[in-house]
Image (cartoon, rainbow, N blue to C red; front, top):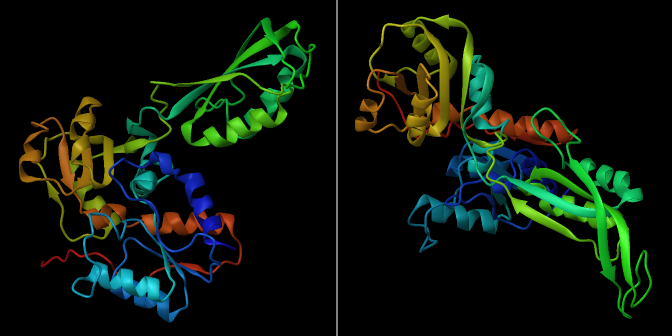
Length: 365
């Protein structure tokens, strides 16, 4: 099994196109064609995690936070990043990061946190735009079913909980083949009129290569005509944060105490209590302050995230409780998510979560 096989499986769940433009996801160090001896998973790479991989002869480390993120001008022994890059290369250990693509995936980091809290009827808090493409193609009437089945088989035509979605209308197509062609129908140098169907369907942008390949493979024409349109629709399939509801509303203090227990955290920073029941909850694992207003607009009772600045606590203006539950704490279930993805796709494979606690924040109680 090669590293690229592992990457393919992860990016089926969290396509690279889901990542934010400023992010640095993917294979940061190593060769994707190398065979995999074993995998170690951690929220982030530390020198202790790297030594753990070396001692167990695991040559692929998968993290959530990228080791190489900001600009690097020097790689030496003066800082931990330089030391880890040098040692990983020397020991031929590959480093892969699934960061905001896993954050924004519909079954990603935020859904894992929502599941731990017990949220129901969850939806994406801030759906990504430009994640849908529309395919329009023109097919001889008798070949319509064959072409549709091929593109549906690779993921086209899904809208929410419906699949095989398309629209078609009959018309006439015209073309004239020149002497360098081998037309499926018609004659060389003669205008041909063919009864055709215009087929329209949508698909996620990350499936573009697979959908077009399937279309070209089964389309009977030597030169199939097709158009792709980028859609403005926010499909709800990917995006930042999650919003959902509790099965039973809770008192404010009781909910915060429960959250502390779920996250195994000694302290929570939060805005003032509002004297009402907690039912509708929005959340974003990691740094999610940019979503405070989105949570307010959707009338969340509580917004859970991390790395909130002091003045951000004034934004809710007594309309919503804002909770800073810690960056590590709100993303701690990510390693289990990555392990589940691997275990569901590979049997008898040596992958495990690091024994090292990579949380850089400590609490004095």
